[in-house]
Amino acid sequence: TVQLEESGGGLVQPGGSLRLSCAASGFEFRDTVMRWVRQRPGKGLEWVSTISRTGVTTDYTDSVKGRFTISRDNAKNTIHLQMNSLKTEDTAVYYCTIDQPPYAVRGQGTQVTVSS
Image 1 (cartoon, one colour):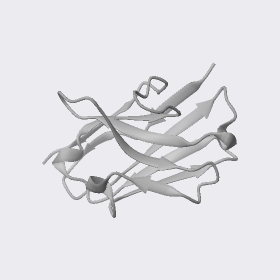
Image 2 (cartoon, rainbow, N blue to C red):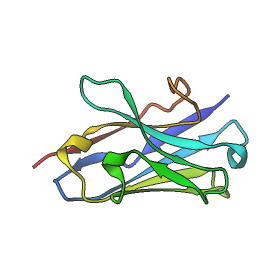
Image 3 (cartoon, rainbow, N blue to C red):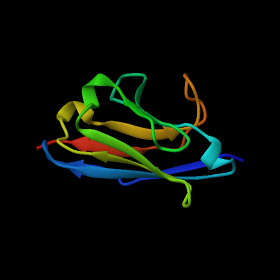
Image 4 (cartoon, rainbow, N blue to C red):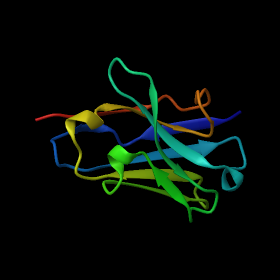
């Protein structure tokens, strides 16, 4: 059974940083492209970032480019999302997923709130 568990969310002021983590199990992690998606209040799921199986290739939605960094540790079956220069519009529940849209296979999410 695929299990994905996100952590690291919280309340942060605009301009602050957070590092999200996702612990994965139940599948061949090193053979799986991983993604972060988010759901802002009142909105649908939105793709944020993708990392290739080896971690060499990454991609980001335009609104987070230059501020967020995705990484993975295949020895620990974990991915991370380093989020810097956070903005109020980054407030959302963040999920890791192994899925393509509609991202049905995802964890329970971690809440990120950016507010002064």
